[in-house]
Length: 85
Image (cartoon, rainbow, N blue to C red; front, side, top):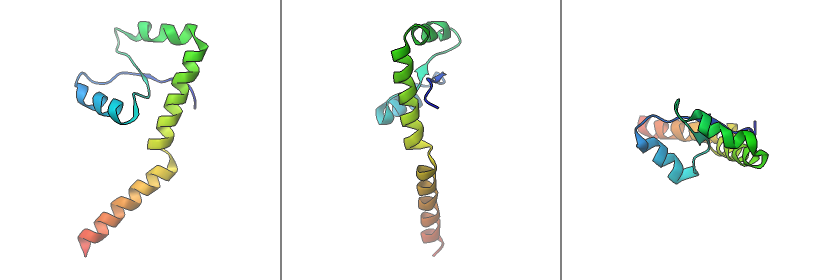
């Protein structure tokens, strides 16, 4: 949608570190205690909102788009076919 996403990861840093290494973090990371602090820059800076919106769009297109999902499923089916023969 091209809008910034504010989300929080669980305290285990593993998944967040993996996401950051592979794609960069596609969302503004916040917790219940840091949400106001995380939102303030997005509220006052329209350029920052656009930047974070583009990051989210880029991430969704490369990870969740129909094309990527179909390719991923075709790979799963191909591996299953090979295991079955």
